Image (cartoon, rainbow, N blue to C red; front, side):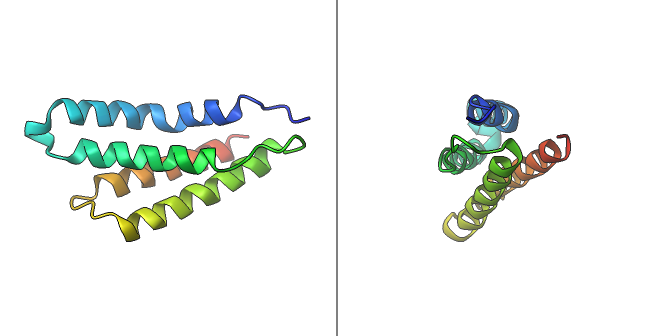
Length: 109
């Protein structure tokens, strides 16, 4: 059995709390930010879907699972770039920030 059952929830929190707050702040002031909050929020949802799509096998090691999550988030970023308009780049910037944060987490092990 693996030793990190809460890892998906904990990783989502560590990766996305700041981005969720950013989306909320931007959505609260659309007169200033326009639709930027929508793009940040969409990017956050794409990361959540990517993390949720990586199963935690009973014998998985944390580093292997985190590496699989990193690959899934990278794929989500590429799909986002190809499929979404994101005119001002806020969603893409959010995905980039999440990938940097994930790389930092992976290095801290």
